[in-house]
Amino acid sequence: MLTIIDLEGLGLDAGAHLVLNRALTGLPAGGRLAVVGGNQMLGVQLGAWCRSEGHGFDPADPPVVIKGTADDARARATQRAGSPSHVDERADAAWGLAARGALVEPGGPLLSVDWVDRDLVWADVAPRLYSRAAAEQWDPATAIDWASHADVPDEVEDAVVQIMTYLIENEQAALMLPARLLARLHPHFREVMQLFAVQIADEARHVEVFTRRALLSRDELGVSGAGGRASLQTLLDEPDFTLASFLLSVLGEGSFLDLLRFLNVHAPDPITATMTSLVGRDEARHVAFGVAHTAHAAKADARFLGRLRMAVERRHTALIDTAGLNKQVFDALVVLAAGSWETSAIAKGWRAVEELQKRMEDGRRHRLSLIGFPDDEAAELAALHTRNFM
Image (cartoon, rainbow, N blue to C red; front, side, top):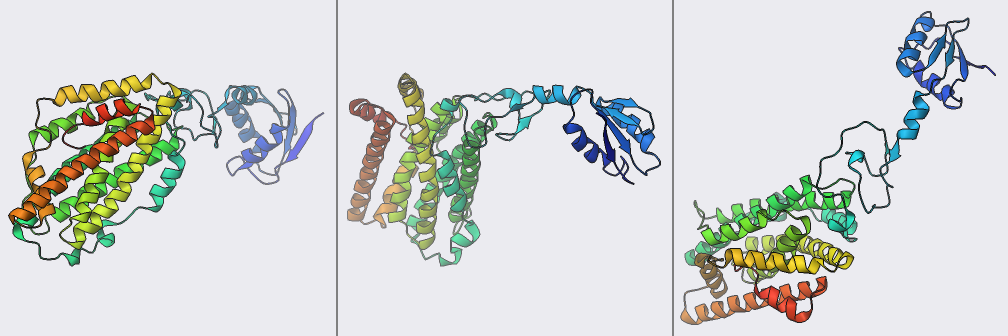
């Protein structure tokens, strides 16, 4: 049976192909579609269009399009890039940059990424953490009242500048590491990708506010210790997704949560108090993903705990001859907590820093237990963490 369609005055240079494709959709290969219309160029345009689309053409009166097999073959070769609402166990490189759930035409370039297995990158909490992260973004220019800077004693201000200098280099490492991981992650795991993108923005903001606070009353920054930089370099050198996330977020940023609370409690001015509170909220999200993902990986394969342990021991061995936290930072923390150079105050500040280190180690042990380590092993590994805190 011959199907007839009237294009009226519509030409193929003005959208008639849409009407033709719609009419051809219901026909089998070899089906015939007679085309009538008032456009004077219809016959010429129709023949050229049929050749470009893989259809046959009969220049009869009226002209007839004979449906080819190209559309059906193309439809058979397409595949869905998973489901929009479901995360597959393994992402296909052939999906490329297609949206999750999209109908993917064949023939595109293969996506060159390293991590395509769900259990190596995923945590069920990732979608919720991303939503929270997007809602909690803050503007350094308005979230902090930079005009509220109070007079701070010179020695305490020097301590603040040294601590800010230390925080900046640690935040820069925390920015670079997820940026590297992000570029090697299949976008099928888009919530993890989005979470890392926000984490990178978080760290960029932290670098900004710590730099601004350091230079609020000074023209120069403090000391950058060689041991601290060596410790951070071991993070950047870790090539594995889960091991890098574990070392950075579970152990490093987890310890920084205690440090930020310490700085908040002993902040000498409202600006420092506000920024450490805001930064701490961001870092808590990073830690939450790190713990959830590492626990997910260990649950999927219990042997992964052995790899985590080896990562801690390898980093400890690599840094055993370094100072870790430079003495300028340690002393600055003592002075900040002391608030003055009275000997009794210095003694109080010293005890406060010792208590901080104890809280950091307890926190690491707790997070390691959540991941699946027995209590005695968690305590042992918590104590092997770098002296540089991150």
